[in-house]
Amino acid sequence: MVTTYRYRKRSPIGGLAADISAEADTSGSAPQRAVQIDSKVWLELPDTPLHWLDAAWMTYGLSLHAKILHTLHPQGLTVKVHRFSFPLSDYVAEVAAFAMEGWVREAFDLTAARIAVEYDAAGSGYVFSWGDSTPFSDRTSGIFVRHTR
Image (cartoon, rainbow, N blue to C red):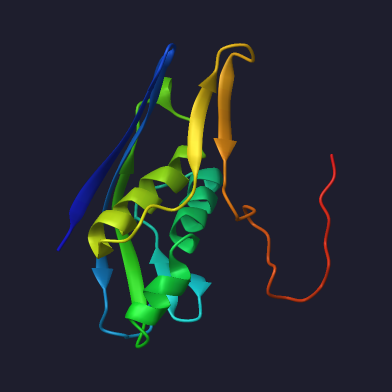
């Protein structure tokens, strides 16, 4: 069943918003076209065009719950996104992670991931906190990597 999660974060400059409509396929069948998030956890993106940053942050949002989802559905799980929408005035790509995390949390009755966003008035922008995780970092390879600016 397709369900919709509406992410909203108010701020002095308006806020952040995105809607995601998706469904979970727990049949264990191998998806024809999807992004592998974990062993048998997959993300199928919508048929409509999607910016690569939105897709990347959406996969990150799903990865925050991938281990528990694999435990709950060892046969395999594909999250099929049917629609992702947002107002251009209240959006930055990182919001896709929050929308996906919220959808997964509600769909599977999970505890919220330790991620947050706050508006920083002094810096006139948003500050994202990713808890214990590092976006797009593969700590399972065993190879040390470091990112610099």
